[in-house]
Length: 119
Image (cartoon, rainbow, N blue to C red):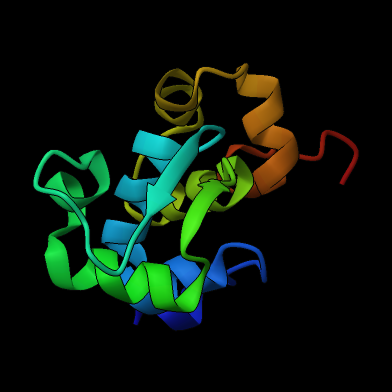
């Protein structure tokens, strides 16, 4: 199960609790690093409502904060999720607009580790 395979950081947890991990990642990719307005009475033109639907928008407002909030980027968490989904470090780096070295540092050397030449 994905929730057992990936540790969700505390600052991301409210988003994944309401949206689930997959939609939570989509939400972070769409809004991470920017302010959004969360309302218990969202307007149809709300970009949040358009992505997650009315019910989830209301749940987010109740859980996180009614009003303006800056969404965390969550890039290390997203990188871990994308690795779990089978993407390579290069593909993850392209998706998150970071270097492959950054992705490697976030994820550790995992599958891409070099063989021990002296062993």
